[in-house]
Length: 318
Length: 248
Image (cartoon, rainbow over all chains, first blue to last red; front, side, top):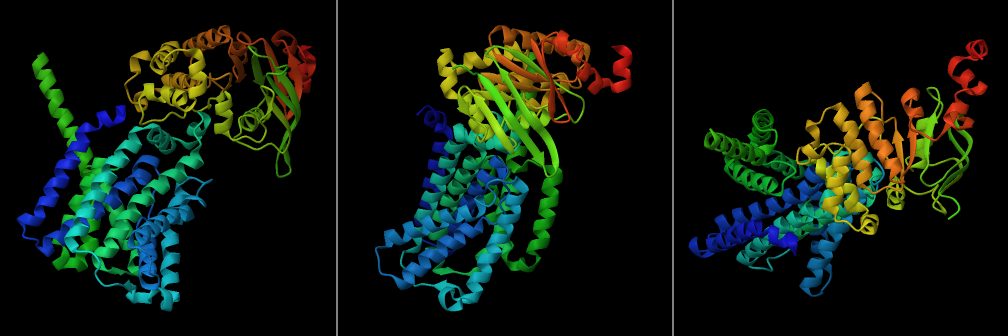
């Protein structure tokens, strides 16, 4: 409860943001273009914030965050197409599938160092890609799996807002608690973490599960919004987008990642007319970020604020 | 509770290389034991095996009546066996205070026994290692000497019952060594059991009550510092046969 009280500020910010986002629906008279953009922005923010729990806090670079989205999406799609059970169970199964798929990355990487985790996370989605392209009858090959619209788009938009708000607050709470301390210690030095009594393997698996859980939740939402899940999710592009979002926003900070997710969603949307130059622009953006703000936009904002504050203090003293 | 810490016939081989050859020794509670030997004698290997970073090939390690030879480092830390590293390995992005507090946070059982609050305990440890003025600074601002102190503080933060120190004096000057010696003496006075690997023999001998000498993976001497330093086999190990016989 003490942590909850300390987090009053971020919780109220998220609440205000959510109300603002919800009110877009009546204001825009339910403009599906705007709603579509904002839905995907919310989901990207979820992916980025969940990635940051691994990449920013634990130092486990995950180059396959979209794997969880893909597994969750395919799970729900397959159940939708082949079984007739209440939809709530389908959603739960999708989230469970995506969450458990994190074990495929975290367990092999259990005993080894962060760099091997990165390699496993890079390769595993490609395996899934292969699988979906091989068993075409089941997974639909290049076309993926498609279903008819079952939820109204604005309802899914509300869901996306909810998932985003919950994810940001939940991960904030996670990193401020004992487990967050464990994850940061693992990032700083695994051996020392072991030497002071932190069960490194267990905390890594837990971190992966938490990250995958929220990503899968958003993935299921994304599947229902688009009515489609395809093998492109197991490609590198989406997962790299998530990494770039966190680098731009600032790793090791929930709000940095969220900010990066928001900014890059906008950039992605604006770049749509010149989509073929996307990678060039991304590369340029990355280089500029590394030079100007290696700790991301959030880090830059923080240091600017601090500098101004310090000047103010010094002037006050002088 | 006959035995506090006991190692029996401990062996460790890396392929064909026998790094530890049937090592057997005992440590009583409250003892301050030195562990010395020329380069490559197996001191650090013994450390890594005892603290769970390496698995022993055969033999037995008993800590507080429990066979710990198959436990991982974090389980051993939970049992109260804490080590430091020769090259300081702090949590750089955390503050100095947090570096100490981590151990306390993950070993809540033992701090409860001390019946003081975590915050008080951390302050006491920081004062003990003379880093209280850096409490809220990031560990990355500390210089080498202070990092060595922090390494000691970080280990104490985990409320050890048995503290294993891997070359606490390495790379320090005489004044810094004296300051660390004082801290270690204070810990020993509180009744903490220490095992110290060190190359700086002159400074080490002033601290310890007993010393074990390793040479090519074998234990060649075990006893009071003044006796061991006159032992023929030890002199041979350090100086070579000819020099040893010349000086004897």
